[in-house]
Image 1 (cartoon, one colour):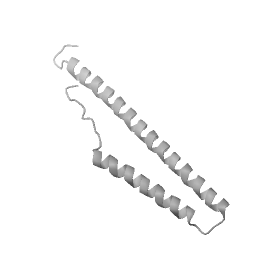
Image 2 (image 1 turned 135 degrees about the vertical axis):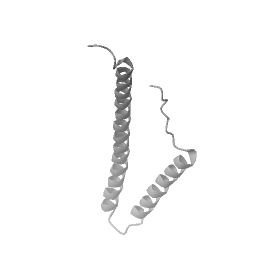
Image 3 (image 1 turned 60 degrees about the vertical axis):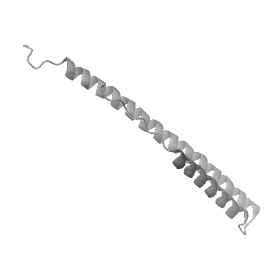
Image 4 (image 1 turned 90 degrees about the vertical axis):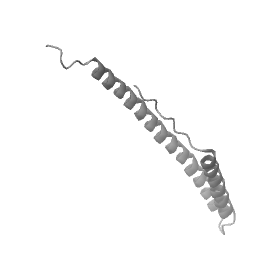
Length: 95
């Protein structure tokens, strides 16, 4: 393993933009549901549905990230095994 894996990290600007975008989207949805010309039960249902959608989106993002990280670990272990096998192999060794 002669290569050092590069740690990918998002910039502060990207992180800030993602947080700001989330806040704007939630605020706009909240204002839209609040100003909706509908019964309070309909607005409550929509608010609960939006909250459920947000929590399930966070969970989905975490599951996808965890699966990707696990795949990277397995890939690094397989790469180390292959490098060890190639380092130990002597093509001129008699059988």
